[in-house]
Image (cartoon, rainbow over all chains, first blue to last red; front, top):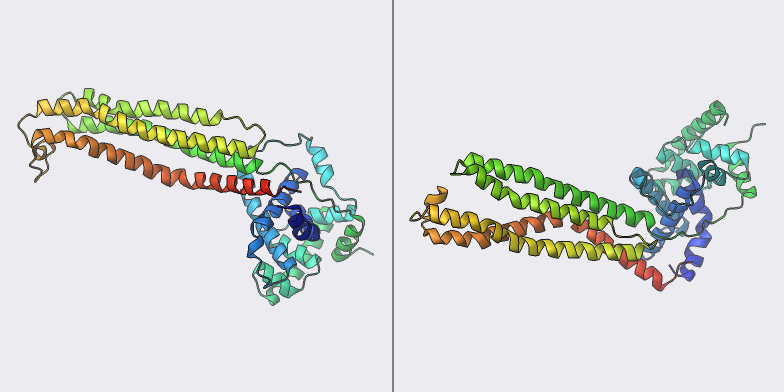
Length: 164
Length: 210
């Protein structure tokens, strides 16, 4: 991955990648691994982007695919990890917290949703249109509209019931 | 008034400074878990040699030849011998030092797998004929005058007893083919994965990572 590639293809989309990776990871260490894997996948697939969709849509889709794949493999990876920072668990969790307490609560709530619901709400919060979300998720626009409302209600319920 | 989800999200990121994680040393987990899975598969293959040895022993008893127990034991020896060698080979892969460098680690693992593979091939080519020769010599002297077909109870194999020895290279070839089949089935995909990881890392080294 050249610096040039990093500057043109990673940096402009880093906020997208960071948000998605945060929604699917449970520790700072996981988050960094997820982020790194997404960057690598973007680099590997650099020639596959044909410009048929917006670059952001492509990045969203790719980031989600990588995170979901890693999530499935997570159990496999456990126990073979080396080179960890050896940080105490509490410290790792603290590093994952955000400056904004409400945002932290919201993220904690999002993490309680199913993998696909997490993706849909993340894309919705990123103000993508239902059409774009449907394209990324591989569903139809009407279905996404219904789902977004359901997920939002579920999320509100989680946030009020748990009172994090 | 309670803030909406959308508002929390928007405002949260206004205050939140998104910090891009530094790229850590690459491929640590990937290479280690890949090697772990190769070791596990290899271990299973090596362990299979024990029931195979027992089966060969039982098969000899079932055939009910003269001195079946003795010959059963003799025929099963190679399996136990390969088991011990296999165990040593698994250990030698495990002993490869990580050296905090995934590329060098994978290259060493790849070399070790190649070494083991070619050693095992040579081992089969030498040990199968050597191990089976006493049985064939015994059968040759014990079954003098009979045709190969008569010895094995197969019609149509009207070859003289001496033709028994032709079975040695055929038998060896079959074992080599089985070993190759097992390798292709169990380890080849993993070694190809190692190769592609090494290639990718080398490409990344040419264009240094930010």
